Amino acid sequence: MAYPFIIRRWSAWAPGVQTQDDWQQFAAGRKPPDHQAPPPLQSTPKPLQRRLSPLAKAAMFVVEQCLAPGEQMPAVFSSSHGEIGKCLDMLNDLQQGEELSPTAFSLSVHNAIAGLFSIAYANRCEINCVAPGAGGLGPGLIEALGLLHSGYGEVLLVYYDEVLPDFFPATGFAASLPFPCAAALRLTLDGPGLALEFSPTSSTRQDGDQPLQLPAFIEFLAADRSRLHLGNGGRGWQWQKL
Amino acid sequence: MSNTETELKRLIVDTLALEDIDAADIDSSAPLFNGGLGLDSIDALELGVAIRKQYRVKIDAEQDDVAQIFSSVAALAQFIDSARS
Image (cartoon, rainbow over all chains, first blue to last red; front, side):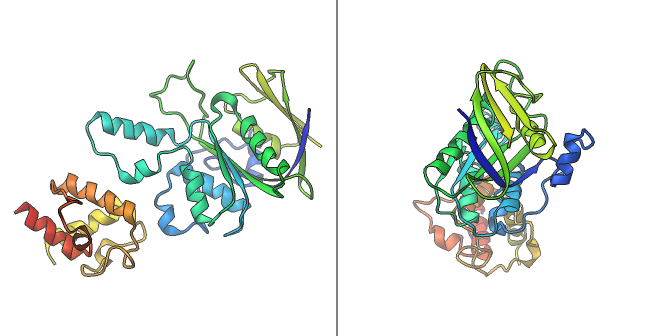
């Protein structure tokens, strides 16, 4: 079964790679990510900005490229591990008998960035948060397609993940990105845009070179390629440009 | 202006990540919440923890007049100075 959809607009960020041209260069192997922080946010209120971690700033940066200030639509936020570095810092503080920062604690849930997004955009539409772990990009997209098929005209899908701290074992436990990465996709079922078809497959062919798959997907969007397979643990996803 | 007031202004700017505000520009008598610096309840909790760490002074929400203590930098400094003496 294949599910057609349209990307009306997309934006992605990795350190130093943030425009469509940058991502084309990245796809051609000419622009490896560096260590730059996300650029300053334009429409997110200042008092909120000081609560944003670097990963949250990256997520809000890509959202700002896709959504006008105050624009409302349902959204899906998908992150395999969320702001796991911040959680580890808090656990270390607890272990050392330090008091936790109330600000950090108040934002230590998986839907914290989605919550800050809803405040920044005064968004009253439905927002779902997905933690797919090693399941990669498929579950978030399935959630977004579900919202579109239930009648919403447009859905914002936001992916973000950071590099897992060294504390976590690299094998057998969790998958990490090689650099922090965020992407926002403005999805719809008809109208102009980049037309794609998504299908779950039993093939485990893996076009991405790391398990969380996000840079591979952005590269596919930016590059002149018609098909992408991403497989993990016996389950695979396939995207085809139409 | 007391030393504690000067220290507190720096503590507020650093603890609450008020990047656009110069500590020296904070008015000692201006309200910290509801206008003024525009801080919220999470900021109040964060400041409470920072004050406990830096001055070993605990603000007790049950017994102290929290609204009065947090009404301005001057009021906060006065509370800290008297609690430490």
